Length: 115
Length: 111
Image (cartoon, rainbow over all chains, first blue to last red):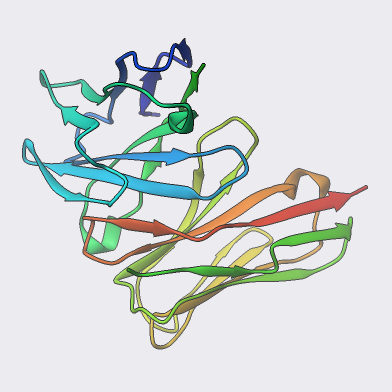
């Protein structure tokens, strides 16, 4: 069964460093998403991406964040100048985006720890 | 900003009991999904409901979408320890552009 894969599973970084989280969405999906979940808190929407551009982003997704689809399979989230409060699980998801099949398929997540 | 509320926040029951958890909003959703999340893992989709009033069954789980497409419920019959987890509802507000998650109901089923 096709699945969304994410790397790395866990990354530890120093405050102020840049990190790149990688995702391989399900191949026939058209919409891609990044969510984050701070420990013990709710799943928060960051950004959605369709047709090689951002389709919607939350207020969390400020200039510190960027997304890219560098090739036909990878979808990346870059976090510049990391802060302590960026520590969270970051989930990538993909979906077909149509109303009848609008569900999301999530990866296992990348745990980011900022020291 | 669309918000989804879930109740109860925590629920601890004995194996074999029935339970219902709720997902409510003042916003209308084009579809609503229920997910279950285990600690340290990503949410796993259980069901999508699309039509107001729709009822879907998945073994011992029954999902209902409100007539106005603003709320949903999840009923579990004869709960088992394997049902333990965080149950999340997520609403699709813009036909796939943005899914808003509720805070979840953490269910614990004791043997």
